[in-house]
Amino acid sequence: MVAIDRIFLHERTGAAALGSLKAAGRAVADPARVFCVMDHIVDTRPGRGDQTLMPGGQAFITETRAAAHEAGLTLFDVTDPDQGIVHVVSPELGIVLPGLTLIAPDSHTCTQGALGALAWGIGSSEAEHAMATGTLRIARPHTMCVRFTGTLSVGVTPKDMILALIARHGAGGGKGHAVEFAGDAVTALDMEARMTLCNMATEFSAMTGMIAPDETTYAWLKGRRYAPQGEDWTRAVAHWRTLPSDAGATYDAEIVIDAADIEPMVGWGTSPEQSVGISGAVPVDAGERALAYMGLQARQPVAGIPIDAAFIGSCTNGRLSDLRRAAALLQGRSIAPGVKALCVPGSSAVKRAAEAEGLDRMFMAAGFEWRESGCSMCFYAGGESFPAGARVVSSTNRNFEGRQGPGIRTHIASPEMVAASAIAGMIADPRELAR
Image 1 (spheres, rainbow, N blue to C red):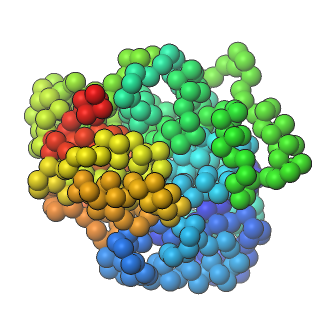
Image 2: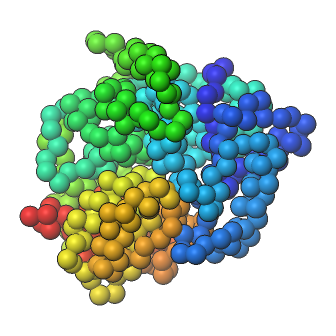
Image 3: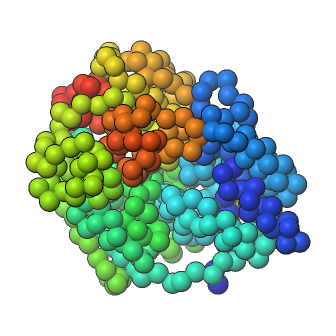
């Protein structure tokens, strides 16, 4: 039984968990520890309200809103200035902190392990139990250290790091493990980059992913709304310094990857493990089902595959630093004719900051649509999609069959590769544009 410090709900499952709790005659034990956000099925088109393109989607929003208010929870509503994707909102407000336990009914909750928290995804019934008792029963995971040594080459990103890991060791490589990411290449990352790395621990089948807190973590958290203040901050940092793994600690499993060996990665198939470097090709032993769905052939180079659409956003790559890097490549350029391109900031705060820097104008001048924040077309649940059968290069985390809509062929990659590919009209190496 583990004590739970923070619980997040969202509109896709929040009403169900709160409704079931109420039906059982139980109350939320500590409403101050529970937060709710509208992010999964909200419309991201300008001027949005409660209406969604998903049939019946509005009821998810209105019912979750009513249940959250009745339970006395902190709610980041559709038009709230703090609205956004849960895994973006929580860190930027300092709700997640080193050493805390945090759960949410979303598999990418492990994103928040980047701040040294134990964060993992759960189901609605587990959320109900945690809200009622402040605890949750879990099976103790095995431990794994994934150590990225050396230095990343110019133009290689954390998205490429995690895709390289999954491609080399399989989508099930971390099953049953809590994974600590370590090594010189990890400690050199800024906080938002660390979140991208931890975000896809779930695609590695890990229970969670985390990075030991350090000076980068403390500097990033200081002054955020829910972070400790004054003397509490001093005491908190002193405690956080005790959290990192001991020198010489042993793990149940360990993987070492030389960061210098990683190049920009792109998914070619229907699982994140089906990814290769931009200089590579579809493997000789590629599965027939994946080839048929993606409309590709074995030995086909991934660079140059024509695309129909491009998407930048999600809890993986929808933060301000992601948008800055993509916009830098788009500046003074236009996307290829016939390509539909969208940029969806990860939170309303990210959107405002990007607009203050003029990034929105850079995206729109290049031909991208500029949207309100939310999960959007990371997955097909908001009712919006690309045309059936379209080939999309996407900064999201999953490329399963139908993930972005019926018959959609998704190539997951970094925001830089999405931007470069949108300009070229085909999968392209962002380092060529950078040069």
